[in-house]
Image (cartoon, rainbow, N blue to C red; front, side):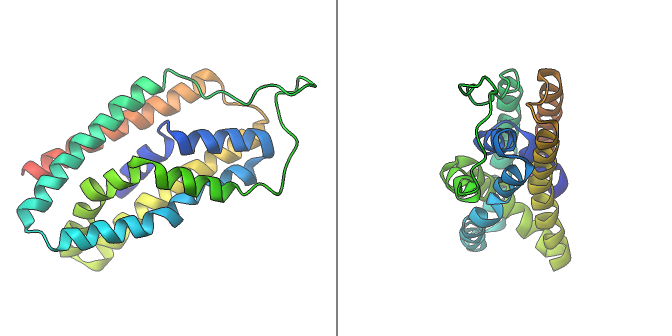
Length: 204
């Protein structure tokens, strides 16, 4: 479940993914990869807050939140399918017509990613409606099960963006429209399927 959610969230269109692609185009794969690690810094306080609140609720509330979370994930998947029709655009062309900017090591790409992710509703909605209930449910099986969910989720969330940054940085240009569409559609379908499974488990 963690791997499926992480991959779906990692490759779905959004502000952080756009920053990863554009930074990789402008300043190489290293810049985009640094942005990909932003969720590891921003999500910890959000996750702790969600888990603390959930621990005070009865199991029925956790099941209800999980059901809502499943609907939210389905909604995000449907939105991503629609947004995937809009290709990520590169930065405007520079005076020399290259369409890229001079490399600027002074830019703090990780700080940009942290700000974007903190202001995005996605991690808040995910941890309150999906992440916290699943972590608590897995913890009832054992600590290793809960750890597997969290590691699987963030491993794929960050890892998919790092791989994308490497591909874009190595190619020296934006992914083709067809390639980006295939990736976005696949991730969106995965999110929808995961949301359906979450809803089914909550109702059961």
